[in-house]
Image (cartoon, rainbow, N blue to C red; front, side, top):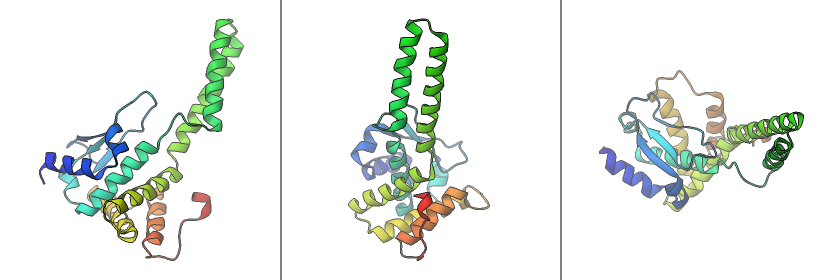
Length: 200
């Protein structure tokens, strides 16, 4: 596998929204096959780090689906969308500015506390298992536009998740990967049992 050729191919697989915000970066020293840092609101670019020496051990369909899942997760992280937590964060920040202009120390402390709680809630929601399940579903939808059937896309993502654990030398899957794999087995028709509603 020639690295630059593979990067160009992966960019073609990505949806247009992913190409605008994400960037594929070679990182041969990392132990993970693929990794990304949680995107903070001031970061315009959302890099995906790939160890191409490990990446080449995956099949092409697995690579496609794993990349689409990562891109879907990264583009799905929204700090500024109409939501209760974002509303509280905005009101707290404005309140903090007003209180600081009036030199009200207690008001500033309350506003900062509310801001921190709201920002943490936004961060936690974007790091949740639900956000990963949503990214899996989005990756499968995008893959269908790239010629994959829903069942085979789910199977490729499932086998890709399991293959990454082996390539990275892990003894098994973590909790969120186990739940995601169970959900993918249900989508692929390999299991009648899906994910419990409280995880969705």
